[in-house]
Image (cartoon, rainbow, N blue to C red; front, side):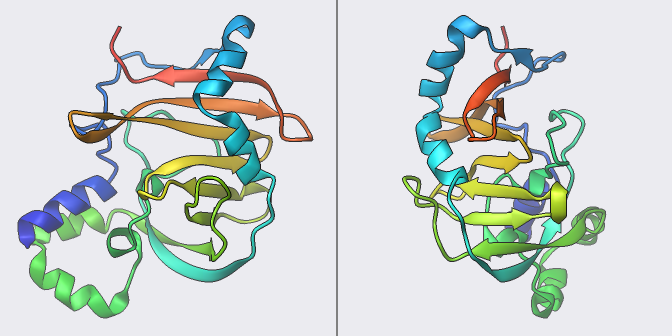
Length: 206
């Protein structure tokens, strides 16, 4: 049980560039997507499906208090201060249940608890309505103009999120039986939620 908890807390603490991730370049950075490649990039990430999710209204009726852990220095800074603890939605892992604190304290060694407490906690809202065409959870994080609307795959891993005039898309692939984050695409949208430009980062070594 302790070993399992160590693995889970390691993930929640932002060690996301791991055997489940592609190895990043030391100078990995976002590069503009050339106009000639823009259309093909949109098809590869199934933007039509993504747009159908971000243009729909969702009722957010359920609240959850979740762990907030920023990304570490190896992960790119993303719009809206996106925390790596929300890269996947696993309620057993990220939702805070004070009633289980005593049980957790008995099953996790002090070193792991100390590291875990370095993170914070934040309230999010959940919609009972799942995203169209993706059939995944939709989560609202933040307040006012700083709100992020997060869209998850049925597997629980994040598909994309909408922040102000941008949509941030996570490119996952299955390698050797493991889901691997291969890259991130950031698209700038017009007032009708159509893309007018974008940039891309790849975690693959060249």
